[in-house]
Amino acid sequence: MYAGDYESAIADYDHALTMKSDDANVLNGRCFVRAEANKDLDQALADCNASLALEPDDAAALDSRGFVYFRMGQLDQAIADYTAALKIDPDIAPSLYIRGLAERLKGDRKDADRDIAAAKLADPSIVKTYEKWGVAP
Image 1 (cartoon, helix red, strand yellow):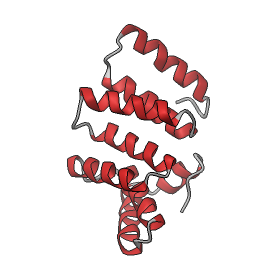
Image 2: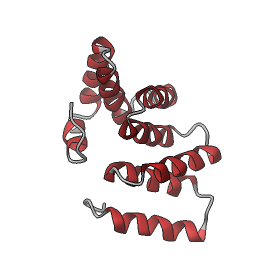
Image 3: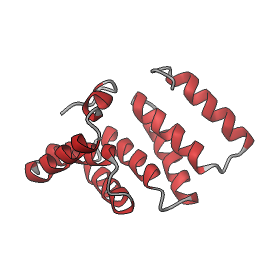
C-alpha cells in the first residue's frame, strides 16, 4: 500500500473525491489513513461520518470510526462502533483487537482478554500491524 507515506495516500484520496465526492469507500479509506497516521483526527471523524451517512451499515466504516475514537481517547464511542461493526461482521479482527484494548483501558479485563484473544486467533499478525502504528497493549 503506502508504507507509511500518509501524505501521498491522503492526496490520492483527495483526488479521487474530486471525481466522485459521495464515494463511501474513498471517504472511509481517507478516514482510516488519517487514523493510522494519528493526525487530523477531526477530519478523519468527519470522513467516517460522511461515509456512514452514505452507507450506515458498513462494518468497515464503523471499524474505522472506532479507531478514530480510540485515537481520540473517546473509549465509550470506540467500543460502541466496534460492537456495531462486529454485529454486522463478527470476524473483523481489528474491531475485536482495538475494542479489547479500549476495554482494557476502561478496566474491563475479562472482556478485553476475550476480545484480544479472539482477534489474535482471527489474525495472528494483528498485534504487529497495530504496533507499527504505535498502538500496543
